[in-house]
Length: 451
Image 1: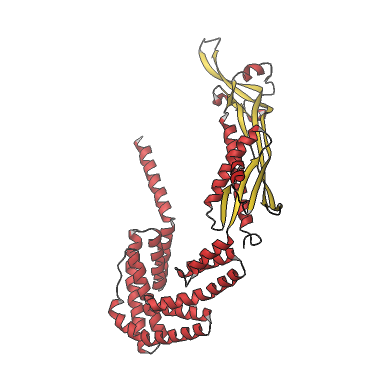
Image 2: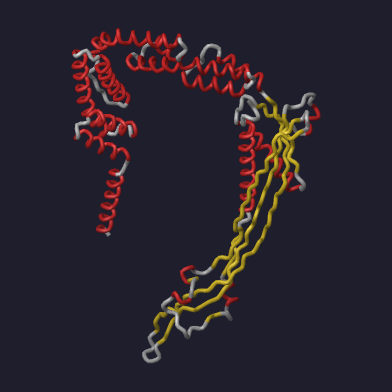
């Protein structure tokens, strides 16, 4: 037993070692070592940093970042001094930036690297005139409304002076101004929804509002908002009426949770619409066109196999009783009861003034499951379904026990789980609600509808 435990323990350790060696972090560290061996220390440091960022606190990755990072920063600083002395300003600044970026990224990952602070004054002096010229070029592009060229030049300046707030503001202007103008054009053409999201994309791009973009977004929502009244679901039977009420409540919750700023969903039931003095801009009319439940569909089929029986056999000469295994060929019937549920819901978006259907769709869902099945109540190990020729004990002289089939069927019991039907009904209902919600939102978000 101790030997088995030791073998299991060794196998567990082996599996753990193989899993560790195959992990993405470990593979990245191996590639990092290969890159360093080939003299590509910068790439090796980046690979080690990726491994550390993927798995923070990994000691092996931290050691490699420290080792390769210190070596590479020294190399980049030497390159910076060499190029600066040769008058190659761009190459010198790029070398310093690479060293600085390695420092900041490693420090953020928990590994302290240093080496650039001693040369910061030299770097600032070297970049001063160069950055000043770049800013002048970018401002000229901005004045000439070459926003793409200005954006690229300002982005290049930020590479050398990322902390300069004034340059950041100029870069944001170069990025935002063309997007801001395009949004204004769409707003003037009454494409309020498109204009709203153009301003939203612009804010995501620059990280803050630009000029009066927030006020225009509010104005676009004010002018472009529509109200959609959700009517009761028509249902022909009492069962479908109960289901439709639940579906309608879930559908309204789904639609409200979309938080679409241009759509105000209204629970437009009979009581609400009779008490209201105003009509919604659009009506959502729905009808349960089908809800079919087919219970108790029986599938009965014949099976064949073997039943094993252990009997006592007495030797007539010695009188010794021994156990003997006997296989009987058997034929029996197996039974399954299935329930099939199919649901279909039609919805139409209607203009209440013109009483015209803008769009009409139908969604459907179905489910079929076994709710009752015959199970063998005896020892499953003693029953072998399958082809008779598959057993080596089978003989051509074997007799098939068909006369006692009823006795064998008696050892089968029917397992019945009525909750399966409730689960199926809920699944079909939820699927119809989800499909209706998705299809309806896609329709409303279409450029042909809300602009």
